[in-house]
Length: 225
Length: 145
Image (cartoon, rainbow over all chains, first blue to last red; front, side, top):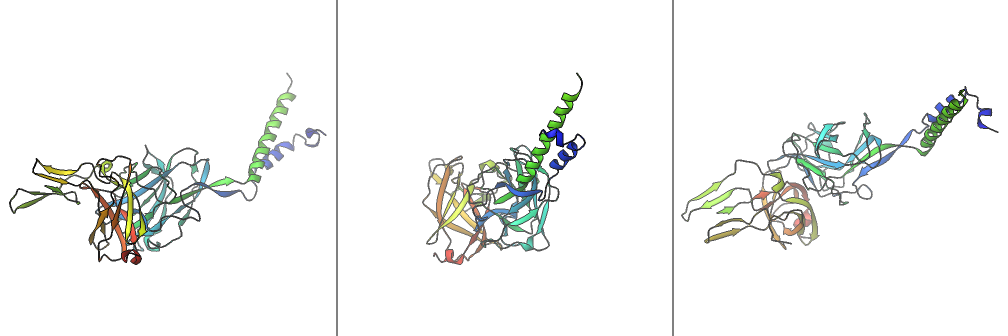
């Protein structure tokens, strides 16, 4: 039995559309980049300073990454802790940024956490999780930054990774107005998740594309020459 | 003449008068020593790894009369209340200055009497301070366990 015998022309576009429609679940979270160790482990005892670094510097920190696949940004995990003073009223700002000549550039999305919610450095605090609302696209092979900044009332630690990640790290001593990169400093621990299509969804998309291709071919061959 | 860990210069002319010179410009970021990590080895001993931890020069000299070589790392810790503690460094992996990207290391012990807590650790090489690193010092480490 030939395909077109049971699929009239009027039905085929509908089937193709159905095949292109994402199935439930639409997608699953996939790791686009991580420098956490097994079990989301990181250096519990030391980290790069954010805010008041106690030496006269007003620090902000940035760590770069380049995803291996193109995907909408879904969530961010960051290992932050309180070093000495983190008032509840003072926000710590975390943002994925674009790259600007190997420095943090325009903010893509911004997350805020009150300093007072951070656990103390030296404890195995669970990484903070920030779910994306804007879902900016992460393009494969493109450099992005995760930045953490605060005010001078906070002394926050972005705990170091333990996996030997030496991706470019940026540091600012004026709260994030200007950056020095690559600093050579060990990046803080973080994890970037994207939205990766489920295999069933991907199969549907591929199937839909094939159907559309078939329809176009049939239309072309049925036209009088 | 001696380059101080603060980046200042202590100068004397042979009399009882001393001068302290404070630079009025910031540190060139690329000249800073880099701290890559600190690990506790037990027995009160820590190991710091980093780059150009001996600074970019030997410090200062005064003709053929005085050589105040400072081609070794100096480590200090600052607490939240501003107390400063200098640590004793040993086992320098190198005394070469301007080490570039080569990984270097140094062992250090805490200043006796220093309380456990959270500190900002700064390494100085010939007067040039690193960017700081926040570190948690436990009571067991203070006790040398």
